[in-house]
Length: 411
Image (cartoon, rainbow, N blue to C red; front, side, top):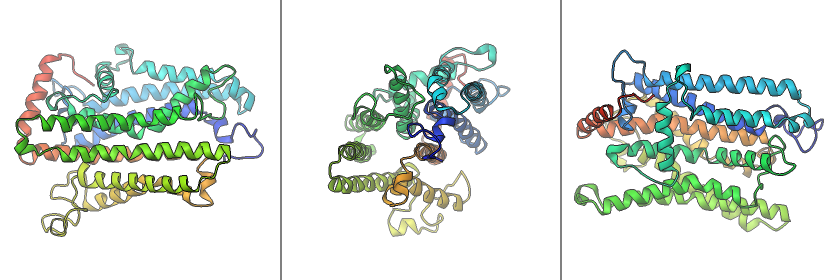
């Protein structure tokens, strides 16, 4: 485990085997596998994810479903990283000096992983059109852009929400690059989370939340300028959603201030209490929004609606994913994973939470939470568009038009 006294104090045991660049690549690859599982499961539940995100569907029933293409890409990424890490192990054999000297191997793997998302790979039976669509969406979302509903607004929101869960992973990617390009630095050395300055990494961590905040404000302005305000409301829900994402900023800023104060030996009692309050507000507000708004469950609704005989207690009438017990379990899981920061409040777990293995586990748990969240968020959007029949024609017509505009299907 981390802190093993037989290894050098500058490089813990976990990092000798699994350096930071490989952890970043691993979580990216897990994301691709996870998206494939999302698509496959929801496809089996008769939920048409491509139509919801205005993704061109298959032009022929003989073509393989979208998740097969995702699995092909995930397999290619996995094989590439597996070859790289076995090569790295054979060269370094967990020797601290060699691990630091051979940092170019895992960094090359990161570059290859990035290239596989961009380069055309038709000869390997991996269509590049879906990744081309992903990159185009990323470019729009990266500045807080938001497509119109007919052009794939839900896909933009889904991707931006996922990015908020990958904020720490993006921060680790920056740390890898910063350490690699720093003179006399190494990407496989003990991660320097102040690389580039005390507040640069925390600033990068706020970007995904800032993106979603801007998208919420765009939605609010669209509602305010809409000629159909009587039916769509005044947009207060979008402002409330923007407020939810804004609660992430105090958590990140106060955490950076705490680290800096601890380094300088400054008293931190007031900062620590403020950080706890900020974490509680962010976690509980986000949990409420997941359950009540993103999943349209009635757990936090009025007594009459929550106890309605038309549906199980605290849920809703249409449940497409699974039995009610699964929904209750996922609600509890979402709350628990939203509050993983609480391990820092335990006197014995506080130190453990700073180990590299623990940091990686917390990052993985957040990615896992978001993966589970996607199933129920997509289910909710499908029900919203099909339960009244108002959105069915729009979905099907948009999908038909997109097929005509792009003869080459997107994977």
